[in-house]
Length: 243
View 1 (cartoon, rainbow, N blue to C red):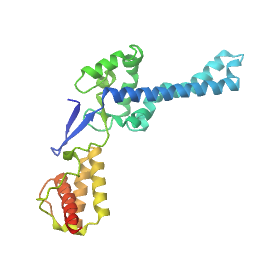
View 2: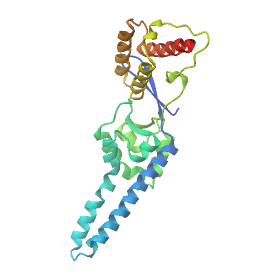
View 3: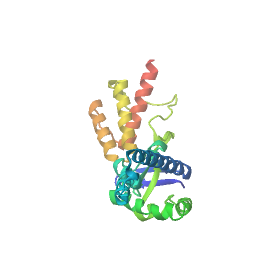
View 4: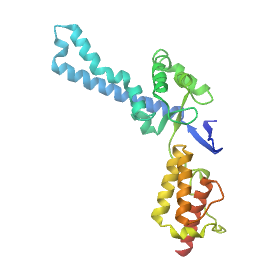
């Protein structure tokens, strides 16, 4: 419930936390606040240029329509350029992805944008909100049509999803070769690992594990993600003992 489970081809499970209704509503409010401010600024600027006083009403209409076009295209343009986010979504740390967890395509962003007419404008947001609440993957009609979902990308600090698991006094060092790694090395390893985890890109984690094997001069016999976790814990414990 409220999570999207993805299984990679390497049979490694990743979980996305689905964005809450509240965070999506706040993101929507922020975005439309930005759009309203832009509209006010544009109309004020155009009025000072005298466009509305033109003898040609078609000219006034054309200039105004062109100047306010970014408001109409705002969700589509920003989600495309910002990889599934708008300014509101970025502030709330949520984003649009495919159901399989990968980056959505322009076509999918376009479908979501077109469906705004049904989800938001024709029903005053009622249909979209109802759909988000009732569907298993918290999808509005546009998400269902585009086969997308909106996920929460805040750092998940659960022990099983980070490299900062608590180390007990009985922890046994598996790889004493970690003595070769500096604090800077281990911090870079953690950063790269988290990058791979956030992107749900197992190739990054595999490549990182291969690089760490070379640095330590060993060959791991466990899964890459378990190997990296063990290396980080061994390093922490070893230097903790020396402090």
